[in-house]
Each structure stands twice: as structure tokens, then as C-alpha cells.
Length: 397
Image 1 (cartoon, rainbow, N blue to C red):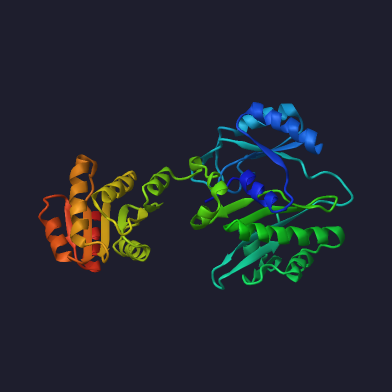
Image 2 (cartoon, one colour):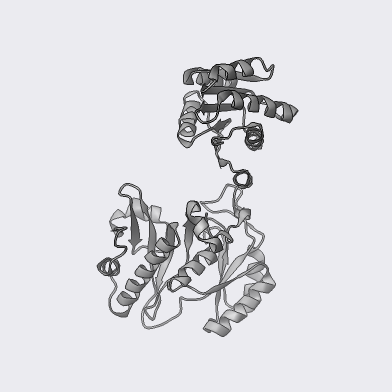
């Protein structure tokens, strides 16, 4: 589950990570009130207006602005709220901005120049360990840094049995070229950041930039946080942070129906039981000359109601030209699935305007094939993988 910047900062702050303070606002009036409150609490004279969407690169798209007085706070908040913000990480049409974060200005003058760093905590799947990735090149795309100057990216793997150790936090501060008070601040920052990542059951914490202020404080100026959905039952308060406005509406509907669905860009809808078989089915579609339009795992209870819900989800995509149903009947009997498909098809009537290819293997597969073939519906049965691929290829040609 992705979070907004202000929500990610709330989690960071709860674990002792210093953050750029801010208040979220839904309209220009709230933005002005937030700016006044920040001035009272922090003494900041200027304010940063930040669009809150689930995407990076907001500044490049015009979603981050600096306001030097309250009139500019109101004006800029009015411009950003309601806009369709387009960044490299949004769909081509962009994402609508529903709220902004009014943040304090932390680039104030002092004894030294502010410096920006990049830092993230994530799982290294190759080693099965959490990893801190960091760089002196903060404030810019880490992908560009990795491509052009890979020697400026450092990593530190954390043993899950011990957690982050003091020497590892000191190593990070040393590699970033820090000394004195800033060095000590960074050691505390890194330790608290890793603790926040581990105890919140997150899959990603990305802070870009981590700022060393002109008076040697270390703080998170941004926060991109992704929580592990499978661990949300342990964090009821985090579940309330979900913003469904930022998510694909079809995927939200699927989740409410208990279906595992991911929207893709292809032309062949998939309905499968089991994640492994679903991945193999997507490969099958590509080999047949098509492109999968979705990942959809209906699970082990593919009854008529569940099949009908799955069909409706798939058919919400106007690009779908055919549907491939690929079910292995182990726990669930193939004949029950076949009857579910026939019943769902009849219930939906004219809603189904594309051909359906059904491959059922396993318990009572022969009975299932007979049910499909004798249904009189625009549904074709298949037994082997290659046969299913050939039928997909035929309907697309």
C-alpha cells in the first residue's frame, strides 16, 4: 500500500526520525491557516506547497512550489489543488491533486551550505536481507545516478538477526563525507530510519532528499513509503491511511470482492486459479501473439458468483478482445467451474461481446469440457496449453 508524503513522514516521526514539518490542506483556505500555524510553531517565513499524489517527480511537473508570503500560499495552493499533475511516474493523463502539504522552509542560511543526499531502505531479494541504499547525489533521479555515476551509490546490507549495528550507521555517515555534529546526526537518523522501516512492516522507504541543513541537522525532506499489504493486519492505524482515490478503481473493486487483480495494457483477459499458473498463462498469451490485459487469480473457489465478478472486472477494459480462462481443478472440481462459467455467461447476457477460451484440467475435466461444448455459448474449450494458445491466436487474427 502506497502512502502520501505527509503520511510517510508521520510514520518516520513516530520512530524519532527528524522530518521537515508540514500540515496537509484540502483547499486554499486551509493552506493559509496551515501556513500561519507553521509560522507560529517553527518561525518559518517561507512555505513549500507540495502536491500529494502517489508518484515521484512532482517538482518537475509543477507540483512543488515555494511561497514567500501568505498571498502566494493561497494562490499556489489554488493552482495545484485540482490540477492533473503529470510526472514520469503517473499515467499519461496524470493524476488529480486532491490535497497539498504546506511545509516549512528548511533551506535557511547558516554557517554552512545545505547538502542533499539520497537514502532508501528496501529488501535485497537476491540475498534475502534488508538493504540501505544511499548516495551523495540527493535531490535527483537515483536511476540517472545509477546509470551515469554508479560509483556514487553505496549499499549496506542488514543482518535480520541483529538489525542495524552501530558501526553500519557510522559507515553510512562516513561514506557521505560527514564529520562533527552532522556525522552524529546522520548516525542517529540512519538508525531511526531503519527501525521505522522494520517495525512498520514496510517494503520501501525512500527519502530523496535527506537534507543536511546549514546548522548540521539531518532531516527527511521527502518520504516515499510503501507498506506490505500482508502485514497490515498488525497495523490497524496504517490501514486507515489508504487513499483509494490514488488507486486503480478496478483493482480497488477486485480487492473488495476478494480477487487478486492487476490491471495491464494488453488485449487478452486472463482468469486463472493460482499465481504461478497465472504467470504461465500470461506467457502463453504472449507466445500466441497477444498481450495480457490483466493478472487475475480467482483462487480456489471459482463458483458462478466469483466467475461472474471476474468477468465483469475483465470486461471493464475496452481493449480486451478475448478472454482466456485457465483453471487447474485440484481442490475445486472442473465441472463446478465449467458450470459456473456457463451460469455467469447466461446471467451477463449481452455484456459479454468477446470470445472466451476455456482450458480446464484436473478433477472431472472431461465432464467440464462436455458442459462447455454443449452450452451453445460463444465459449470454446481446450485441453492442452498449445491448443489454448492456438485458439487465442485464431480469435486475435
